Image (cartoon, rainbow, N blue to C red; front, side):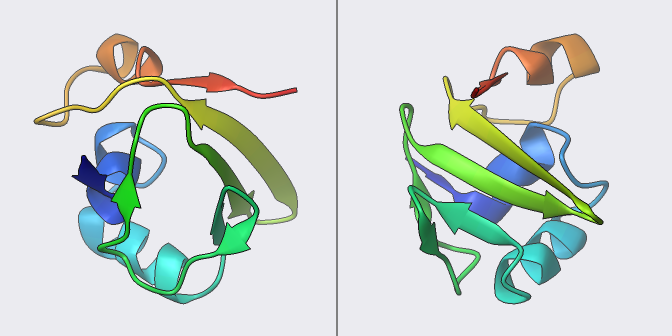
Amino acid sequence: MSRLDKWLFHARFHRTRTVAQEAVTGGRVRLNGQRVAKPGHVVRPGDILTLGKGADVLVVRVLALAERRGSASEARQLYEIAE
């Protein structure tokens, strides 16, 4: 299990963990279709995240968790783009 803000940071969706926390508390992240208000919400493999990035919306499936922020290629293995 991993915190939502840490996972977003490790998967390189946000430059810093603070920005990831602000995205969650700002209502720009949904977990399995439900708006999440707390950055510490638990994320598990198989969860679907809907991310608001400016005018775009990105839907991703969590494939794995990470202990640290790795390279971009390592981060890409943590999720897949959902269609």
